Length: 333
Image 1 (cartoon, rainbow, N blue to C red):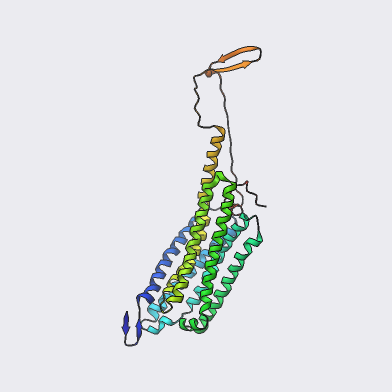
Image 2 (cartoon, rainbow, N blue to C red; image 1 turned 30 degrees about the vertical axis):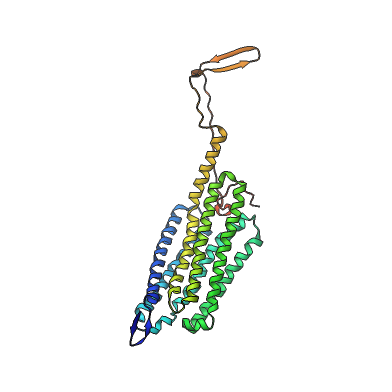
């Protein structure tokens, strides 16, 4: 606890310290997303233009988000140095971050909503709640940002609209849980139909659970700190990282496709070997016998008999996002 004659005591670690740590961790996550974006453009040059544009837009928004974070930190730590009341002030960068975070989340949520749409057999009824929640979160977050601009202080927002922040975070948590739950449900259903690819589908399910859990608990943590520790800035430091979670989850989903394809090809090849009997051993020195209805068996030396089998197998991928990295035999209509 730090005190000063110019103002009330301020808990430095839980205010300015929380902001600094949040900004540093968000910057690390932003660096990871930069690496993922560069890897994507290098490894997936044949992707449709719409996907490349989506990644480019998310990358740009993430960079702007990082700049806003450090601009806000500069306001608190440098621009308002020694002014204890600045802990309660809301610089213009914070409302912009509140708007930008769900905006980045739209791309992630719509990407997974499209996967669920395909896995569900293009069932719009199942996908519609996800899209509605996405729109609701953006609308409520924009309203909360407008209130922040208007009041300019966290304490006033707590009194005259604190529920907006809480409701935004609740919608985010519900959206993450719903998306992950539906994704795992439909992958489980396809796992039963395509037992030979269970390892691939298990990998997809594990990733769906992990990504949903990350963003879900992130939203819950920010909400609890906003409600229980509103006199600190811990909730702001945690909220800095939410957009980075969305960006990295989306890019990781895109960049994991090659690994999933390789596992699918390996699984299919193993199944093919079992069906064709590849891997059996034969005695190459034993003579080969032929029998005809009117003659006895005739032995032919093995060095005068050659049998060749040539097998060619090709795998073609078209619009991998529409296939959601599942087998071609799946009925998508």
